[in-house]
Length: 309
Image 1 (cartoon, rainbow, N blue to C red):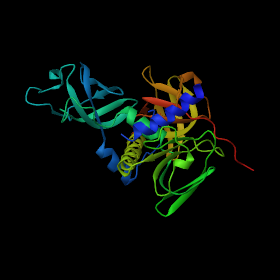
Image 2 (image 1 turned 180 degrees about the horizontal axis):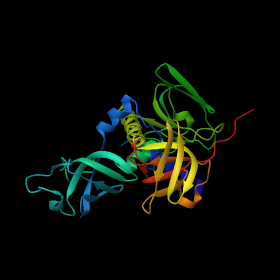
Image 3 (image 1 turned 90 degrees about the vertical axis):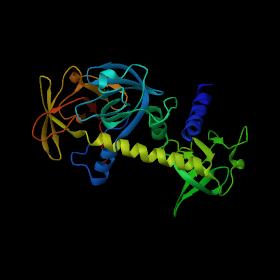
Image 4 (image 1 turned 45 degrees about the vertical axis):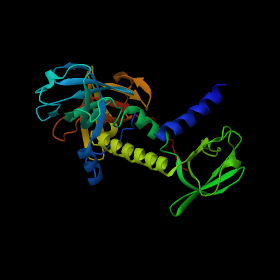
């Protein structure tokens, strides 16, 4: 029963996607594309839960974000709102800014949403949906049989194995199978583990495919935005609450405090004491080559397998 529910969740993701933990990547000097993404920033739409000093807590349909501000933040909430303290809890807001930590945005603009009653913007759930589909193969069916589907995207095609556990979603068919797939249909294929049959195949419309591809582009932009805020390196010194890491551009000192969040891999919580000499870390913060990095988040990366023959 649990396995069946898991497959239905995979298909549900496909259905929803037709409508951070974002991996953290180092980029001390981001390329032009990443700089452009950082300028474009991220939009959130939600309702204000509270206002504390120069920060807002904003509840979106899919999670709660902390929104920080400074003297350069522009308020476009109407004539009745002259500063942050005038924003009342329950007010709808649209925030544009840059990611500085897990579920934390530094706002460049805070404005009234075009439709305060509507759920809009890029929210955590949509990014999670996009992330679940980032390994999927999307394109047009050129061949299909009981044990294989061939999907073409442009001039490139991929042959993917089907199996008894593969689940299908075909519009207007209650219990579809591989035989309900047709050459020329657009599909999203969710692969299984290496060497295993695909997990799910969903037939989609051209409009739905465009929406999925747009979400994938947004996910890449968000990852680039987050990448601009951190560094990656190997631990060479630990002292007090300070870590020194060796990066491709030299050694960097990283300061931590009680507010620094630690993780082991993507999902497990960790703490400062788990860090050891030789560990590889991803450190989130505001990198400045002239001073120590004040860490907002630290990820202990798992050891890479030894591929030496």
